[in-house]
Structures are given as structure tokens and as C-alpha cells.
Image (cartoon, rainbow, N blue to C red; front, side, top):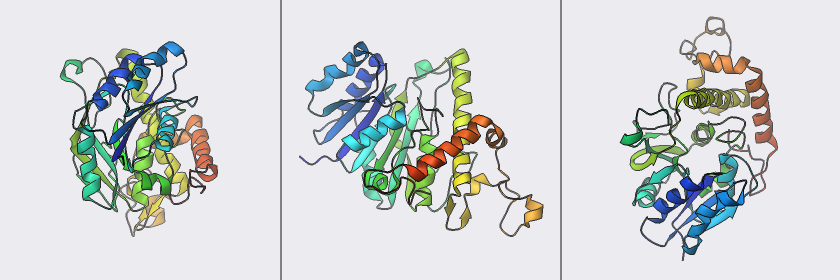
Length: 313
């Protein structure tokens, strides 16, 4: 049977989350989809939970020695077979029509290649700490980049065409949970997709619940990590010279640096809109990582043998 869609879930050392997440996906109707769970767990006992689902022929369990959610998703892309790939995280729960809803925006728009859905915290967990959320506002971005002040989509509820990955390459393994920079992988992919002329759709009707609430110091640490990772992601594209046809990526340039403004008045190139991005640029960890990311983009090869960065930026 030809599969319509593949779901990919990375997990590591969280069997109590992974098994219910997989169960919620397998609760979707039909047998024309597959779930690929990529398990990076260190110990055998952590692998037992999701492996119990192997009796369902729609479920594929893949052990991986890689580290980080982006690396696991890349394994999932390689191991999956459908033309559409949906992603969520092991601390999320999806609705019984999640896969069906995910297919609609990509089928409706030929130019759409990347879709972000709504990510919510259950009512009973609100106020207990911090967890990433995403409420879509503008329906789509096409031939433009989202402004810096709006929230971008999350990898916890994201889908893409396989053909986009074949052209642009997959996720940057230096970005995302479990990597040197613990977020930003979905920002990076969206920038690359928009720069390549694809449409990015935000779909509130595609919804998941995010249960991964952090409290106290853990919440503060997570939020700081998000800021640093997004700063490094944007710094990467400044340093790589990511462009769109009309000029520089607009959210990376200070508002006073408008078209026609003199170089002297603007104060030179890269007057960045976000103070935290400027700070990140100056931090040794961000300088080092942005060089590493740029090197990885220029030297890594994707599954069709081209340099990973070719066509991406």
C-alpha cells in the first residue's frame, strides 16, 4: 500500500512519554500512514516502553546512536517513505485527526512545503511553569519573512514535503534539543524554505498538546537556551549571507536601515533589530557555533549527494 504520510518522533530516555505519544498517533484512523520513532535512549530499560507498540504494523521502531532531536529527525526522514512527513515530540499528544488535518494545507497549495500547527499547553498544566507554545496568526508566509516580533512555528507540530528536504537538505544537527544549541532548528528550516521560494503555512486547525512543562530554575534555563539558540540561528544566516530576491532578510536588519538609506546613516551592515542577537554575536559560544554551523552547511552532504547547503540559503 502506498503511504500518504509518515510521522516521525524523536525520543531519548523518556519511555513514559514516548509510548503515550506514539499511542496518540496510532489512534489516528486508517492504515495508510506510518509512525517512525527514532530512539536515542542510553539504557535498555528506557527502550522498553515504545517497543511494546511494535505489534502495530504501522509502527516502526528505529534505534539510533545519534544525539539530538534534529539528528533523530534526520534519521526519521531517511527511514520513512511517504511524500509528506509530520513531526512531533515525545512529550506531546496529538488529536485523532492530526494526520488528516496535516495533509490538507499541503494538498491545497502546490507551493506550500512547510506547515506549522498549533501547540498548546493543557489547562491543567498552565501556570505550573514554562513550555513552548505556538498560536498561529498569519496564515502563510510566501516571498517574505515573518517579522522579528511574532512567534514562529515549533518543531513539536510541523510537517513538510519530502521533496523540500531533497532540495534543501534536512535539519541542522547543531540546532535543536540535545544539540549544542537547544532550539532554533525550525527557525533555520523556515528561513531556508522561504529563501528558496517555498510557502510556509501556519494552520491552527492542526493541534497538539505539549506536556513538557519546566518549573523554577529549569524553566529559566530553558528560556535562556531558546534565546541563545535563536540568536545563533539568525547569526548563522547573517554570516552565510542568506538573501531573498528583494535583498537582505528583513528581520535581521534594523528598521532605520531602509532601502535608500545611506550606509553612513544606517551605521554599516548588520545593524540588527534584536539586542539579544547583537549580544549573542559577541559571545564566544555563538561565534564559535556560527562558524561551526556555516562549516557544516558547506561540507555536509545530503542523501542525494549534493552539498547540504546548496540551494538552501
